[in-house]
Structures are given as structure tokens and as C-alpha cells.
Length: 256
Length: 313
Image (cartoon, rainbow over the protein chains, first blue to last red):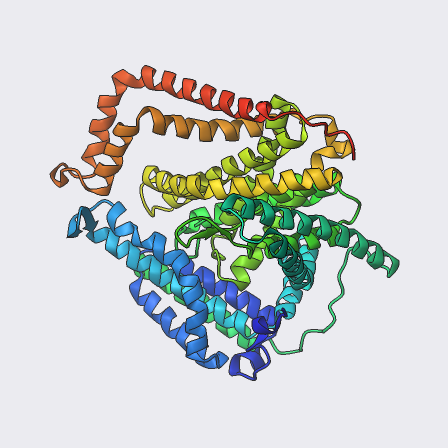
């Protein structure tokens, strides 16, 4: 197994890709997610404007709509299912009855609002992440004030996740050939035992890698292998300003 | 829904949780070195990778559904609570950024719920249980299983509180729904965690964090307090459900709108509270008894496991 599927659209030339660096794109993703996710309730016009911005972003990033839809389909159930309980749990006047359940008007509005906010936030992050190599994204995280241990965990986690995944596949295949058709409990026990092995091997590999890195002069800082391209921050600043303006527009819309 | 998506939290809750998560992460980064070698970056990186690999492994439950490991208590038991917290923080960040699982505005809340309650409080519960029941190979597996179950329910409770404070739904309903869902998820998490720790403790007892010299002195008072507090919250919830099952069902029904709509959802709770007052002492007694029973039960189960020596390495 490899990383290729994560980076499928990262090598294409697109309007967005040629005008922003990975770390600028990381900030665009964060600000877009906050603008969408924290849009005040009732700011429908601002949400509509934000939707236009996100659709323009799909075009600017040159991601095929089908691919985006497939990636979104993976994320949508995470917010759609909890949101669908809201029409029935938020108090208010009855809008319609569904069997024994009573959906309320305010509940339906709240549900729609959350679904729109979440869809826009997830779309924005998915667009930006899809056109950025995972390794570049991790390098971009270097500028974020996170503890060094978290950063190195992220970088080495990315480096070794597929190595460990392959190792799990090997031990798991060996386990299956020994266990055969097992009862559910025995299967759980066998799988847990394989996972215990995985963690024990990961622990050892970590210590070996640590020793090897120390002998190569590791001081706790992971060097970036590729330097970020030099691109003027003007375009990124403009996009960020646009996103903040749309959010402020939403706040003003609600205040009035 | 262990991970809160974007769009659910209000700006206030998002900012508050993010600020607390940053503070806890900074403190954890200072403490993580305590139980590990200096500059343990590579070990934690591999732990992060292992959690990701382990989360892709499906455990078939029933009717085509399956569960997978979340891993908070497990990494805390293997790598120590602070290191485990950092590993789970890295996992939550990647899930939000690359897999769209959990929102960026909810990142602080998700770090607190999954890494904080999973690794830190989960570990405190694990140590407390071992302190109560005595150490042993099987007891470690059982204690880890119980801790993983309780920590998972707490994750649900915390998510419910955050959603309630964000004005998504009345806090009571949000907490009830999230705790209910996690009370089921917790069975899978507890079983998987317990089986892995049990297996690990037989193969490589030296890898289980409690074995190391730094931690052998016994849990500190803070750890015991956190562990007992976490246990008490979940035990209290369980005993409330058990002691007032018909009553609370009725309340959920009225909140959901089954009950007479004419009284209005705002009038109902007040009427309920006035009906409550005479029974408060009884309820309190039931709660205390329930908590005591749950504690006794968990400690008895962990203690009943035959004590196999944990001393050989």
C-alpha cells in the first residue's frame, strides 16, 4: 500500500495551486472551515455567498466534481446522521408528524443550517487538501505553534503508517491461516493479539529508528526535504480577506 | 459520532475548547518526557502510525456492522498518559485535516474529548482500578477494558455538553443521546482494548507503562481523584438510568414531543421539577447507592480475576 491515492490531485496545475504555497493553503482551509462552521444562525445570504466562493474554489482547484463528490460522500454521514435528529429534538411548533415523531419548524431550520455549514466547511477543506501533497501539508504544519512532539508524531506517523499497515497485513494473514473459521470471540481475541503485536513491534521500531536518527545527528527537529515554493502571499491574502469578509457579512446580517 | 463535525459548535464553545486544548497540549508536551526516553519523537511517531493502522482493522459486531479501536486508553497504557495524549492529539488533527472526520472548528473539543478523556482520564481510571483491586496480569486487561468503557462514555457526555452549550439541542437531551450512543460504542472499545492489553501483558509485560519504575510508586492523589471522578460520573449516569428508567423515558418522550403538544415544551420541565422536589432525598440516596454498587461491582470483577504474577519481565 502506498500514499499515491492521497496525492492524486496534488501534481496538477491549477489556478489555486500556482498562486498559493502549501502553508498558505493550510491557512485558507482553516479560515474557510471557521467561516463556514461558525457562521451565525440565520445568516442565510452570507451562507449563499460562501457557497458561491466554495464552488468557485472547485473550479479554481480543477478537481473533477465526481471525485469531490466521492470524497464528500465519505464525510457527509458524520454530520448528516446527527443533524437529522434535530427536527425531532428541538422544541417548537409542529411542522409535520412522522409516525410517532413530531418534527418542529425551528428544528428543521436548525438541521438545514447545520447541514449547509458542515457541507461548506468539509468541501473547502477537502478541496484545499486534495490539491496539496500530504508531505507538504505536514511541512506547512511546522509554522503552526504546536508542540514539537506533536509535529514529529505527525510527520513520522505519516512516514510509517503504511509500513505498519503492511506489517499488520502480514501478521493478519498468518493469523487467519492458523485460526481458520473461528467463533466471533476467538476471532476478536486473535485480531486483538495481532494488534498487540503491531503495537509491540511499533514500539521497537520506534526505538531502533530513534537510535539510528541520533547517530545521524537528530536533535528533535525534522528537516524538510523540499523547500516551499516562493510565491507572493498577495493572492492568499486576498482569498483570506474574502472569507473573513463573508463571515463578517454574516455577523452583520444577523445583527440587523 | 465521537468526532464533532464543523457547523455544530458555537463560536464561544469552539474558542473555549480550543484554548483549553492548546493549554493541555502544551502542558502534556512538557510532561510527556517523564515516562519516556529523552526526545522520544520517533517512538511517539510510530505510536501514531500504529493507532492509524489499528483503526483500519474492523471487528465484526452483528448484522453487518463492525467496530474499530479508538485507542486512547490503549496508547496511554503503553506509552504513558501524557505521551498518549500527544499521540491521540496528532491522530485527531490528521483525521480533521485529511479525512474530514471531525471539524476544524471543533478541533479543540475533539482533542479534549478524545485525547483528554481517552488518554488522560482513561489512564487515571486504569491506575485507580489497579490501585483498588491489586495488580496482576489479567487484572490489567480487565482494568484497561473498564477504563476504556468508562472513558468512551465520558467522551460522549463531554460531546453532549459541548453540543448543548452550543445551543444545538437542550443540554439534557444532547448529553442523554451522546452518552447513550457511546454507552454502546464503549462495549466494543472496552473489549478490544482489554483483549489487546491482556495479550500484550502476557507477551511483553515490560511494554505496559505501569511496569516502569517511574510509575511503580503507585498513582498520585491527582490521578486517583481524576479516576474516581470519571468513574463516579458514569456510575451516576448508569444508576440514574436504572433508578428512574420509566420516569426518564417519559421525560425524553415529552422532550421529543410525543407528549401533549399543547402544554408546550417549555412548560413541561418546570412542572416536572416541582413534582421532583419531594423525591429529591430518595433520588439522591438512589444515586449514591447506585454509584457505590457500580464501584463495588467493577472492583469485584477486576479483583475476582485470578492474580497471576506480574513480576517476571
